Image 1 (cartoon, helix red, strand yellow):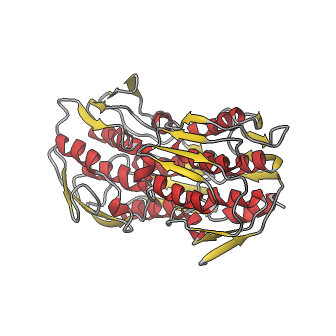
Image 2 (cartoon, rainbow, N blue to C red):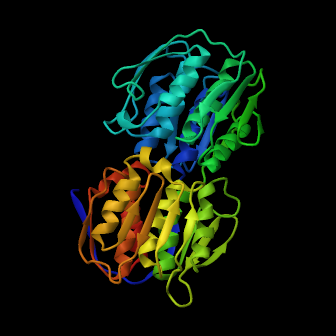
Image 3 (cartoon, one colour):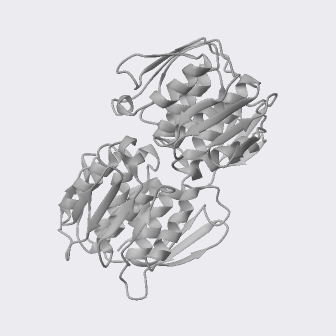
Length: 429
């Protein structure tokens, strides 16, 4: 589909059952593949990113069979993958490419990892440098510092701490944390600089523990994995609903009256993006929450309050906040979002460009956006999505400003939420 025209709307209310979290789904798939025993994964996300991870695991010798769309049984390898040679295509899935790079560096085989052109523009040098310092054999097949990669057998040594930068992507640290238990020896990791997106590391640590590996940490700078630990199946594991996806529907409730209720995440969630509800509440939205659900309604006067906030802890959901700025009562600032630059697209530049189409005044910095909303949204803007699922989903919210909007290349939502526009249409009128 080249484009999707969303009609003008002014009201949103109803309930949505969220698809599974991409972050949790791909971590569960990888850990289940490495674990001893059979893991039954329930409510796994069905999307492009999980598909490429699942295909890669099967190519590496993992058995994964499904009885129905909601349950996948993975027979783990009990350690390193048995396939010692594979060419893997991983699309634009950072949650597959980065962890598999680290795991395969410890598997003593010959592997090639590639993706779509945008993946070949996303930096991976900090992870590769950390793995090379261990003795891993990793070569760049294109531009230095970027995929595609060739990985060969290496002679690994863990006699000193592994150092990795934390200020580019938390996925580098997550990748090391998931890979190093395969060495069977004590390993220590030191994070250089500020660690961004800490809630995603919390997800990794939580799931490692559920698969039998405990990690000690000293703040967010040092991590220790004791030797002799091995992955073992937890038996059955449930994937939470996607908290990042929840942000679009909760925002719709805050703009369009509500209440809009999302089911699948809540107080008991291990995902940091549930804190988007706090950001909405600070803007005046009315929030209710249970262990496994959240509901949002518009402020009593219908107008959201302007904000000036640090979004380092929820960088994905922060994109929704950028669009909400158009409905605020004054200029808004999103700070500490430098990680947007290395996502599916340069999200700072893309967001600034598309917000301006709607009449906003936008100042773009290296790690911030300052957005002054227009008095009236421009109708019938044509929004480019840059093959970025979150750009498409965020800008659907503009239709709740009583203006029609065109979303170009809407099928990019298949990366994490193939039926997003169908679910959105059920809520708005």
